[in-house]
Length: 205
Image 1: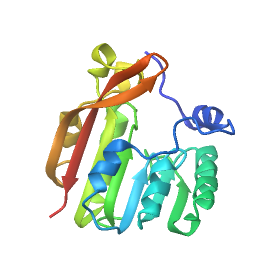
Image 2: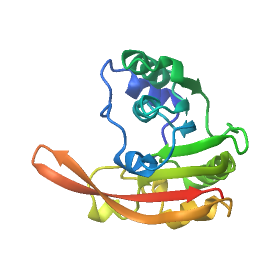
Image 3: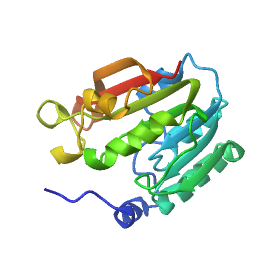
Image 4: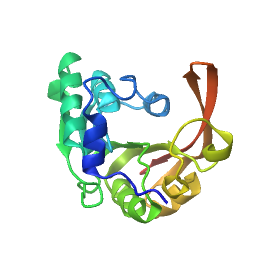
């Protein structure tokens, strides 16, 4: 079984001058916050900052946490280029050891944090605890069904997980508003392919 990527692996991957993925926000994040008033947001596994910067452009004050310092620096550059550097705080931390403030954030978001469930579950539990009263939790990730029936994503089944597993890891902290599989169109050189993701949205009353 492939070994999950660690900080230096990601630093090497992010070392390219260009952004690895698009600088546009994740489609599920955009849909998930469409009806929310801007407030304090926490993005975990923020990568190169595309979602954090977009949230800042929508009026959110964002803390973006990732364990790649190279990615965080690229995020800072993107925020500066988009004139929202004062609204995004990029922090470098290993989520396996990171504990956000309890009930602090109006939005807690994770997109495509693909690590073994044994490592992921405590991260999700702490993420749920960080959601403020009235706040929202959003997660999108590659679903195991994507291996056989979808496009792209990791080939290691050990870092894929279902919405049901995410809900279980949240530990009853939140009222679950959405949990299931979702199709995501991916434009490729030979047309549009479909990726299968798991999407979870919860709220603290």
